[in-house]
Image (tube, rainbow, N blue to C red; front, top):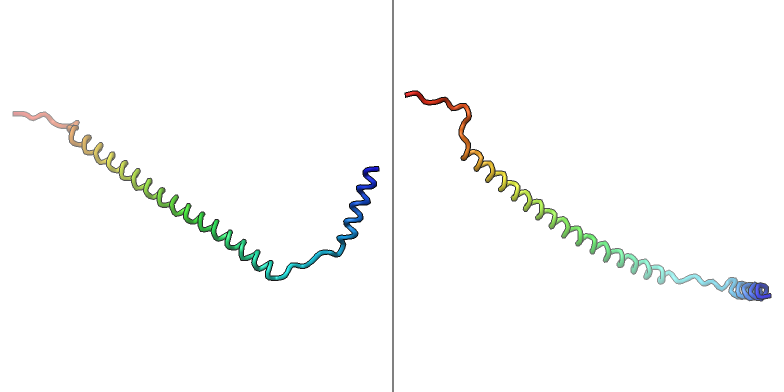
Length: 94
């Protein structure tokens, strides 16, 4: 019995609302489009700023690591060359 009354109720609503659709004015669509573009622009701007900072941080890290490796290589190379003697040195005769 409940299903029958529910079905009747739904049919009454459908029949009463049939043809009650209204086309929104063009200004509504243009305002909606403008708002969506503004939201998209804001999120895009935030992404661009994030990637700029990420790129700057990456460059700083690469420069720092490159400098550290260069410094370590030059100091190690200087210590090696100053502390070693040639292996094939001929003995001096008097």
